[in-house]
Image 1 (cartoon, rainbow, N blue to C red):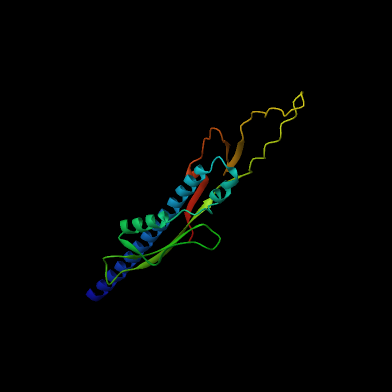
Image 2 (cartoon, helix red, strand yellow):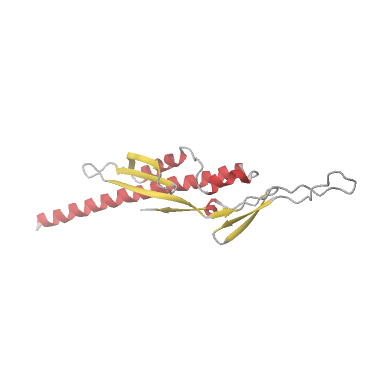
Length: 184
């Protein structure tokens, strides 16, 4: 009976360690993807006056630097794990996001390894503004005055439409622009 109780204890301990590793991997992958989402929005804001540059940011294709993987490492540590193996890598399978591999720490010989993937999914689409039309000629034969309308761009995020007035933009949040989720 004592041996059976000890065996159940060991199995339970192993399951707990595996679950802890998976939780750490999930948290680290989500942290990387959420940091990338914030950086994509910040990059978009920097080019807000040039809608021709929006697409790479709004589709999640712009480079977000090393910060997302640094966030993954921090969240792994908060969950008593370290990045291991491939550590933190960008997905190259068509989805934009990160794959993170972690190993639990301080539980030797029962350390466990787990991986998780989190993706950043664009929620928005837009039609670039049309180039301004040349003004009609003035009555005296010279060039006419521009019509004075500020350029605006319609941005559709999910079911919500945003009109981005390039002269005085009111901008959606990162959560409005992108959805972050675990993919495996």
